[in-house]
Amino acid sequence: MTSNTAGGPTRRERMRAETIAEIKASARRQLQEHGPSGISLRAIAREVGVTPAALYRYFDNLDALLIATCCDLYDELIAETRKAMDASPPDAHLERMKSWIWAFRAWAVGNRREFELMISYPEANSAMSINGVRLEQSPENVDPVTLKSLEHSQLCGREMAAFYRKTENGELPPAGPVEMPEISEGLQSELMDKCSAFIVGEPLPLSWIFTFTSAWVRVFGLVVMEAFGSLPVQDNVDEFYKTQILAMIREFGIDG
Image 1 (cartoon, rainbow, N blue to C red):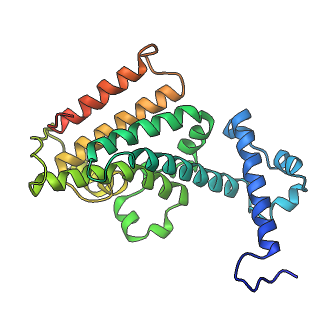
Image 2 (cartoon, rainbow, N blue to C red):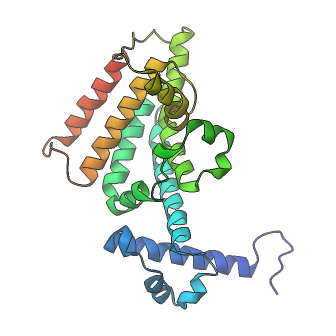
C-alpha cells in the first residue's frame, strides 16, 4: 500500500527520489573522476545496482541526466553565493557584489570538474546564445540550465542595478561619470536587448550595461583561467583578484 493519508510522499515516491539521488551521486563521482565525457549510463547502472534499461524509468537519456546534474550544481553554487552575499547587509551592494565574485571563484576552483560541465552543457545553448527578448517573452522555451546560469549571474547584476538606482535618487553619492568608448548601433542594441536581460536582469543606462558586462566577462575569464590552470599569475592570485575588482569598481566612477 502506497497511499499516504497525511499528504506526504508515498513509499513508492520516496524510493523513486532515493534512486534518483543515487543516480545523480554516481554521475557526479564519474564526473569528478573522468570529466564530462566520461559519464556512462552503463557504469552508473552498475554502481547503483540496476539494469541499464531501468535507468530510463528515471531519466529519458544521458542528456536528461546531465541537465538535471547541471541544475543541481547551479543550485549548490547559488546557495553558496547567497550565503556569502548575505554576510553583508542588504543595502551594502558593493560588498555583496564583491562577495559574489569571491564565492563564484571559490566554488568553481574547488569544483573544477563540475564547473567544466556547467560551462559546456548543454552544447550551443548557453546564456550567451539566448536572445533577451525571447527570454522575456517565452522563458518556458529556454532550457533549465541556462535559466539557472541566469539566476546566478543576476545575483550580482541586480545588486549593481540597486546601487545605480540609489545613486540616481540621492540615497548614495553619485557615481561616475561612467565612461565608455564610441560603439556601433548594433552593439548598443545587443547590450540593451540581450546583456541587460541575461546578466543584469533589468534595464540600466547603456554606459552602465556596457561597463557591467565588461566587468562580468573579466570576472568570468579570471575564474575560468584559474580553474583550468591558465592564469598567468600563480603566486599572488588573491592580490591579483583584489586589484582587478578594484579596477572594475573604479570604472563605474566609484571608490571601492
